[in-house]
Image (cartoon, rainbow, N blue to C red; front, side, top):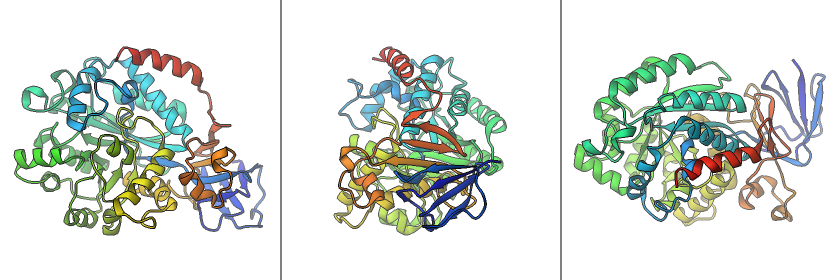
Length: 445
């Protein structure tokens, strides 16, 4: 196997690697100290002297299909529930061709931002789109990205008192049977796996209690992770108290979800005591700062969750509530929102948010083989240049990525393979993708 020496980076987010690192067989096999050379001969050297090198970013919550409905006039300037009610009838028109383009564009956009692993939460299965997760697996494999594909579900529609229209929900037996099929076909627990499956009922107000319980039982049996939206808005808290007689976190415990197998999207409206409970049970939280800001959902108490011991990661959330699929931009927004929430400029640092978007996100997904630049980890890396005017005068290259607004990687590597070169995704005609996706999106206007 060829050995690649990534030599003398301008800066690198790793200890003991100022001189670079050596990659072999898709893994990091050596960290090189400043001024030193690799311990054994190498076959190729990449001069990284103009690059800031980060672990590949890990996105722990997204809805790829929503790239088709960004800044939609029927939904902008609305909070979550009215926003969902406006968009569900539009999303019900999803078809396989448009969905495939939405996935391709979302993954490409993420990859170009330095993201190497993405978790998508797909829960809409209108007639004809029953194989949505298979489409996602195919597109991720073509791009060479790692994914955790969350087999979402909804079985409470408008007629049952839920939010989604009848045409996009499925019954419990169909959901569980397809979940088992996908686990058998794609779920890979080996080191360096490219695809894993998670089970992801959409939210407490769109699925039955029975489905929550049976999803947890299946996840335990198959050793896969559990994911859902929780604690996003005060309306959700009120709904749970009215329907279940207690708050969302109590409901989560009741259905067997309060444990290290679970990671939650948003986690905005948790009390101090609830943050402590989440930490004790090692439940992960995906912080979606941009989406929470655009929908005015509130501020995630990240500092309390971290202090309590919860893994905290970053997610861009859906492209209809962000309205981007850019994880580096998400890191910057997490920094700004975190400082506003705490009222302290020292409470959240650039390195904090980068850690959330790499090692923290990997922990949310239950992965110890990605998220850090360390010997034995997968060689998933993002390389950023500081050549733009916005970076001129920056003295701390790592902090500059976040504070000066980096948004696009120059190079991205996944499992030792270059997936972005000179700012462009390998093997993707970006102009054609933009035109085809844009044409598809017009049908959802």
